[in-house]
Image 1: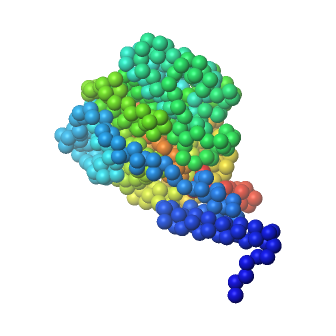
Image 2 (image 1 turned 180 degrees about the vertical axis):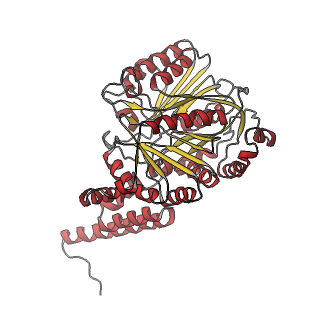
Length: 485
């Protein structure tokens, strides 16, 4: 017969064990019912049961996606779209860019149509901005000439020379009567101290931070961060890509942490996709819905690029960028060029790259020789053999650290934006990319690829396999954390 503990201490232990068991059962059931990735699910179940009390608590803090629930509530708000009439890409527009040599990519158009809620739009122009000096100059010029509205969203907004230049320009726009909104990821405000928030408050600029957290700023692997980089001026001119706002990207004065990066000026109807994404994130953080002509004016066609903005995150937009990448790899018939600072693809992506190389596609993957995150460097190296042995080519760029992100398929399809080739970007962060069918843009990006390859070292399977056993073990252990890097 069951007997209750007869001392206060034993009773306390009994109640604690009972609470831990109940909490662990709840957490394990939640993992089984909600986690898509089997490896992630197994890892969380192990943590939950092997570390009493702390395991369930860690899962509650970092494993439960509360973003999805709030996103669903936001979707119930009427009039979520920009309500701006957009000219969808027609079959004639598509054939203009995809002649007989590229007709096979029509399957990719249909695939991304099914994977993404945003339409492919004609009449756009995307201009690569290859350095921080060039990109910041264009962005600041746009802000300084703004007439109605400025929306700026970034992951990192440093309190340094670059950051203060942007605060000055934003303050000037606000003083002219321009509506200004700034959204920064909360972790991204902590790369410099004191943070840029004091300058924004001093200039009376409306700003907010995404998912405020008490996690120390040095913890760079916090989940569910907003990694998007979007600037929209007057609802008609946009900027997006990989650049944060920090001095390191300025070649003229990079400070102690120089880096290479790539950004884009975006014009045409696809700018509305940038604005829609910002407006959704701003409403999520502040409750304010941006609508009307100030934020969403009619946008005229200015070029011939067929483009589509793809918002992605661990909410209702889950897996859209990853699916677009998989679809593009599967449709590639000649060439596939990739530049990414963090190359930690999952097995389906690795298999897709290998299958493309084995079909005769020229696959080039360009990554930094020295990463800014040591654990990522080790894990990346531990995976390279999986693509090298099937014919993919891997190039290592020399310092400074290269933060460039782009993908070009068959000299016509380009994919640019904030997403990296790792689980953090493709599963845990909020990202924004743009796909573009434009042979001129693809040629410009392939020229960037070739220029980087010309100064890079091509690594080989023999070089990767020749690492010492201790180094290979270190890298292999780092790779075990791949779902969370």
